Length: 289
Length: 291
Picture (cartoon, rainbow over the protein chains, first blue to last red):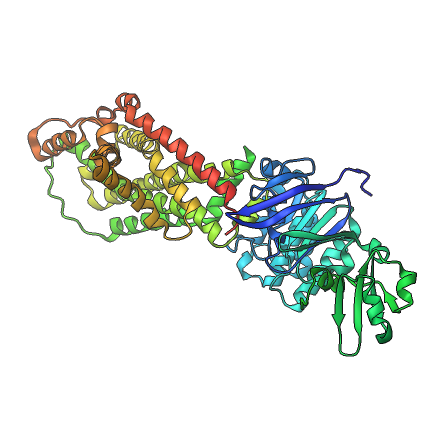
């Protein structure tokens, strides 16, 4: 286990403007060593912008430290200790698979070549093939295999399964889960498809319209949030307890509470801990789909 | 340093044309030498053997020089733009490689690696053609191609060209890199129009012509008259001597003007401008990760 208690990522007041448009607005959070954090939000919420700032791809306002470094100023040095998969399908198509591995082995101070080679063998990918000949799903898995062979304290994945079909997404997250069980590194992953990542996550960061709307450990969700399936006769009373979201279903109404006393809620109907996807929709508020 | 060498290697992986284009040119020239037919009516005097041999060796190298210039120019305009076009810039930026070392690797590829590959290919091709011509002609012409002093001069000329062109055209190379790092599309237009527009605006508004005059120094004749002594005159003298005027032509050593080239302010003003433009290209590449 990783005994280093310092956070791997610290962002305070992270802000990014494009002209008068504020894409990311004073976002602050931490990623602890060994945690698996999901940065979750709808398309255009600012997830990738936050991630790009953390990875030093773009300048930003606010104080950011990743592994104690200032990302934009020290990107090259930082990347020696970070494994970063920026997107699906950014591996250059002209590159031969074996050469992508050679390059990573030469550039990273600690690289487990044997693990990528085992992956190639498992997926029957010849090292002499060019990346462009692989399917989109295999490309994503190859990139993940190269990234996880880097002995880094932080693994960062930006929408790693965007545009992949169901089978490829499944294979990708299975590979990631296997990887996670073997190492103690911190993982930061952005996605707008909550369901598939949910079992992997230890912490949640919800982003909406450039703002952080939730920062919570998964195992603290039960203590903090409750979903009440209110009995019709108690609905008005239950609404008086100020739910932050109301979900109308065909035959019932679900009310979402933060910090409410479970015993009090239980008097008005059945109480449960909301799932991540439910909470995501509830937290993003209103009549969001 | 190892990272830099890996970056150069990576350029040869991506741009296989660095090997293929000079190779194709060499193949064409060798084929021409094998099966081509040329009527040479030259004075068959042994006194002119050196001149004729030297001229032929130069002529064999010329296509490589011209192809090299086109190739490097195209490469510089494409290299940083291509990685943004297919978004692979994100992959490169996820690796522990700085923007300065990356941009410099592309500059070195264009001004050193590509020219050296063309030079080596031109040398090999010239040797091969000299050998073929010797076999085919059975005359003094073939023999005249085998003079060590001529070969030495040819090597010196190539190296001199690579170094002086690299310095003289650094502002141009760096400008192309900057356009490649910055322009979203139409890199060719962006590479040509702004300098012309600047010259035109200066003429229209300030009624002066400094920009135009400076641009003119980077035309081929500007380069040749800076890096070589009286090249045109020498060539005429050379042609005269071949034509039978009786003088032994001047050799390459007398044409090169390294002292004057290095003492010209224009050389170093251009190099400084090139340095500034390379710096600008690095800054742009550092920020332009998102499309």
